[in-house]
Image (spheres, helix red, strand yellow):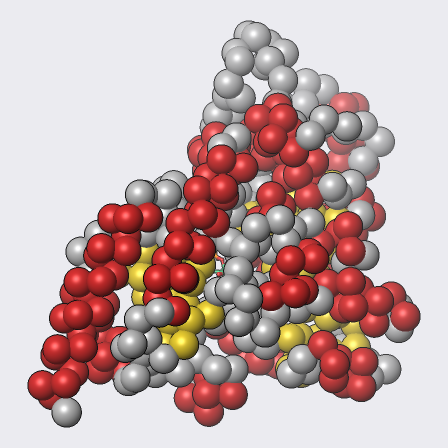
Length: 395
Ligand code: 3LM
């Protein structure tokens, strides 16, 4: 098998069989002519492989799926119109009323909201295990799925993938890791015994902040099941043009991740020394509680850095003073972004739940782009100075 950087460029792609086009064409078509009554029946029966309708499969989307399966070391992958479409398709395919999902919080606010509100309406229980040490004790006979992120959104906790996989396998329960923050360049959860990997492709996979997408990778049998039920019946299919953008973005994933990681480490080290910053969350800092595990399971510590300022007001003043960072949700773009999770990405959660997950009112999340780290640090410095002055005057 070729190495990761080579697969990022080549996997899933081949010259177009009709024209020889080198770049994968955007197959912008809803339906595919099946030619004869007999072939139509064979395609629908699954006796012959082929494209039928773009909600179920499309050649540009298929190239993206094959590249992602290759990068995650999975048998197969299925793409979606967004990360949340992937989460819901997975859940509605695998879970039935009475089943339980046990998750390790925090998660992206939308995912936890979906687990606690939407799944509950369908009779599925969602339980936060708290941490890996308590995971095994929190499992019940109804537990069907263990779900986690590492590093977590927004405060970058690290969970031990080998340990989670051990517990899941010992109890015959499926495990799924949302690998959006790490990307397969830094961590490949399946290598640790995890069953399924999910991504918001909107983030680092595309990398340029111009496409929404989602993907699920894992054993062919499970991926087929999710494609034929969660994708086909819920309908969250990835568009061909978005697949083209994601394929293009993936070619530079290794190069971009190196730049994100180097910049984030510089920023984290700078922030850790700043007197106004109460705490910095970055798995690459030796002071981070998950640093040793991160060293074992990550090939770099990622491009997200979170910092705690003394109050919501200080966080607001700091964010309003940033000039190079854009105040926006999302992450993983080549441009640096900054947001206040408590009022944006995790705003839907009850304040008490946010508190329990460590999503404080003073927490700011930075997504470090690929700009020169010196320019980013200069921007953070002037914003911290202005925030300190403003909040001192206010108090
Ligand atoms: C965000 N996150 O700013 P989409 N899994 C993870 C995520 O971070 C996200 C999803 C799944 C953010 C989006 S908040 C209004 C904007 C770890 C998304 C969901 O459906 O592609 O957005 O993925 O943290």
